[in-house]
Length: 219
Ligand code: 5RP
Image (cartoon, rainbow, N blue to C red; front, side):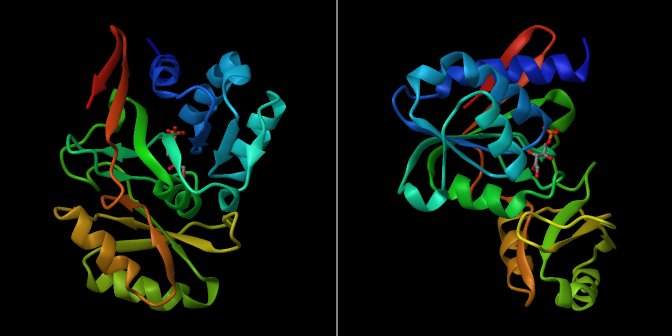
């Protein structure tokens, strides 16, 4: 079975977590694209969605799903998104698609975070397989990079990428994140950092893993 097929299995299983008659929080990425396509099958049963990227907004609209601005909602029942890495405790690295800041904002509005992944995203320690994305105000890029080196990482400028918020991304390689919550706060305290891709404060409450045997749900 391909990775794409496993993403689709996880995405389909996430529909069971959508509360009818509510606005759904929707993340960004290829797994979320599968989820948006599945969500279209119940578009008449939901009020609409708040999306974490312009790409997700466009895909939702293409299915006729109404898109709300994050400022229009006070709380969401559920936020559904993918991850680049996830631990058994539900801490994640996100931001492979550069949408980490909006993902943090929309997920902060939600009572429950449901993370949809294929098995390749499961790790015991964050940073094992994927570099940590950090969104940075452009004029602070070199300063933030030097501070990340002091924390033990090897930051690399993601050439040619500008986020939906007009900022740049530093990907921090060789960064074993043993204390995700502490590191999330430490990096966010560097001047010029908008946010980093550790989701430990807002961890996943539910993980749905797409496998050849079906969806495995970890709560
Ligand atoms: C985008 C993200 C995505 O959720 C993450 O990169 C996973 O993407 P994919 O579903 O394509 O593997 O954080 O910023």
